[in-house]
Length: 348
Image (cartoon, rainbow, N blue to C red):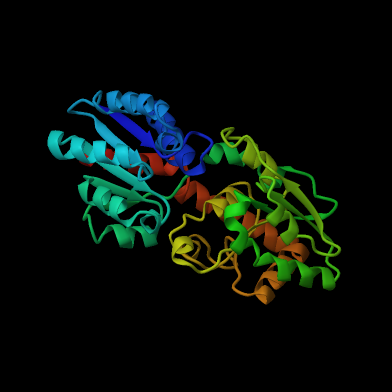
């Protein structure tokens, strides 16, 4: 048996990297053959004719290389109509076993394609409870496997092992331009903290040269550092950066899209032993036990008070860090979740 992954993006795309490329690596380590096929589906959509035709020929050959005992594993593959048509035809007429995996509310992007692939799949794997509720309307075989990380990789950069910062560091990491509305939550929080005389620095990783993001944090007196990008495909680049944070933030506006998200930023902060503060939206409510392994904040006043709590309470921080890392290791790591995936694969 071989698991054939077809992905939305390449290894630089967060969801494809964490839910396909690294998963395939982990499966191979466990003795289960797994391949990630090229090209990624998004590349087909972005490529113009006649080069698009060549990519479609390559992907067609990959699809027809799947043997009867193999499994097709579709990772968020709704972004090209030609690939979608090929898969629907192939599954309908040749009956190969198929898993459909998604980690965001992609039915808001394409309801029809997401619904069809959900109904066609033998098994659907999603990253959050909100997505599972949606998928169960169209398929009875739905499993939640959160977007996971290699705990051992992140633990190497644990906050426990570094020297104290001279200045308190508040951090955020991600693709900032698509999080503009979420990041707006932080502006009044920082203004209030500065007014109260808190001495801190804000590091935003993933600004991608966005003038809109730069302008958002042009706050009088704010010490801010923008890092436009990292080598996202390097497993150690993100934890190396996170180890500099004293707290990691994940603000979210309460929208249907955000309710479906997998709280991945928080997982990365927590695995490094960095105390997190997050909005109580969607999956964060399942991940975070307020005051136990992290903090929930729902208003500028709550954000400010909880940042100050972390700033002023080293014993609390020590306890939170320990519980945070325990949570990730036990429930959100490849070390735990690859075994769950293998059990799911055995079912089909």
